[in-house]
Length: 511
Image (cartoon, rainbow, N blue to C red; front, side, top):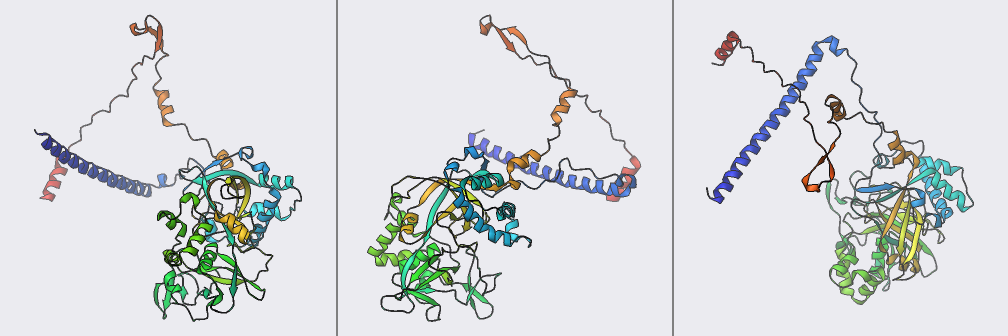
């Protein structure tokens, strides 16, 4: 037979065999289900069997282990957390205690559904209760608090050795309360026709992910306007303007940061915070400039983006519109001395607060972040080992070991945060109640494997004896000589008892 013919025959026969195998598996599954139905009906018919106590499960039903989707983690000893002893734990404790005010306020109320679905759940309430009566004034006491109430867990995205950090800050911008020839870029509050399913249009907090609609009339919903349409004036003239800025680039970066301070000519200041967005995913303009070969990846920073936009006004307009996402703000009652308010609802702490993926993490979780960052200059490798607290989020912050580090307000904070795009080690501090090591210690020892029982029925051959082999040049070599293992007796072949009358009746019935 020719090779091509043999291949075709093999494929045909293989496909036939595969189909037959699937039929056998399906038949087996159906047969197993029929056997289960018969077993249940058999128990139902025999009271003495049904009265037997139900068989106990072999292991107790323990809670599921600590698990974050898409993450890998490794329990550590405190001595193995690099840089842990060098940090200012008292400063970290004050930031953690600020988060506890929000966490303790929820104690006693029903746990929000969002917390039930996260790995930490409501477990932070335990260390927060301990912090309620503790007001340390020295570094050693604050350090002991974290070590006594938490366990360190190295965490990263599955398959990756490190996490990744960027930085953010609160811009301080010049503006006007009214439109002028100089100040003609509007800062908008949330429009009344912006609609998110499951939320009232007047809700204080709206999600920063998922679809957002424009409500037309009472029932019709269409996607909301994108950045280009809004910049072209689709919502202009509706009284939504909070203030006016000089430069659309200033507005873009205020929207990326999620907050801003606007100073007016009369010396007064207003504070703006994120309120809602238009439903389109965030697109990083810096990544577009890298992909187009305009700015090299190793030189990318917020300052480089600003410089290019200032030198290319037409290109800047087109680049902005590549990011179709648009942020709406609301005015907050904060003084110039207060920091911006994060998503947890409390003022952030410069150098201690981080934004995390809120779909995975709980606000108030401490993360020890360690590595080198360009803090002092663009090319500096400043050692960074700092305990930071999750108090904010952002639509671009996605993953188990992804954080945005908050550096405060003003131009210097902007310069530092604008050059951060670096891999870092992440150590998540997990409350002792969820310590994976402690949970593992409570797991029962499994039952002996069936192979051990079988080994007792079929003893192993005697120990190996030295034998002489010509290949070993007369030297003794230990060779395991396996003796035959006795097999169980074959099952007796039992011929089925034929009942002619019964089969005749069946056949006649079939005919």
